[in-house]
Structures are given as structure tokens and as C-alpha cells.
Image 1 (cartoon, rainbow, N blue to C red):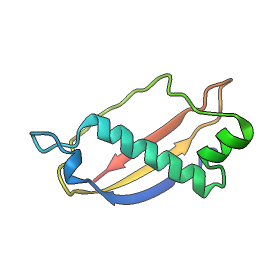
Image 2: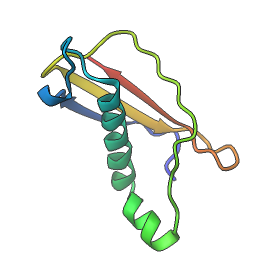
Image 3: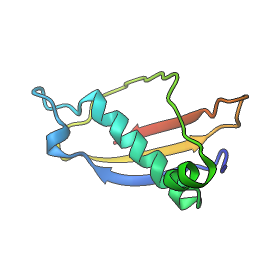
Image 4: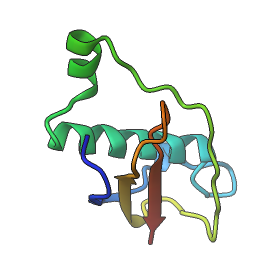
Length: 100
């Protein structure tokens, strides 16, 4: 597992991820984060399908803390980063930053 190496992508919010106040819904922020984590695992040669199919392993979300310093709007460019910290027992902490 690649630890402490930041993976970065630039993207644009999608119109259908927006609520009535024109902010990205928190559920879609989770989707953005999951996709970013999947892309990082694939880039490291450890795709989630391969882990499941060959190793019988899966990741399960057990805890989460989210801090919002602002809101993303429709069709807004953003940069997302993720990295994995050293494992603590069965826990593999993963961090994310999403910035305009």
C-alpha cells in the first residue's frame, strides 16, 4: 500500500450534483472522494476489484470527520488530493482535501 504519497486530480463539479441552493450536496462530495481513492489505488497498481477478487479484501468506512470551509457550486473547478497514512492495526486512515 502506498503511504503518505499524495494523489491529485483536477475536476469540475457536475450540475446534477447540486442542491436547490446551488451547492454540491455532501453525498456527492463523498462520491468525489471515493472516486479519487479508487483512482489512486488503480494508479498504484492495487485496484479495488483486484484486491477483492484475488485477495478477498475490501475497505469498509467505519469513521469519518468532515470539515467544510466553504461550498462548491455548479460547474466549479476544484482540485482534490488524497493520501493514506500509516496503518494502525486494522485501520487504514485516508485523508482528503478538496480546494477551489
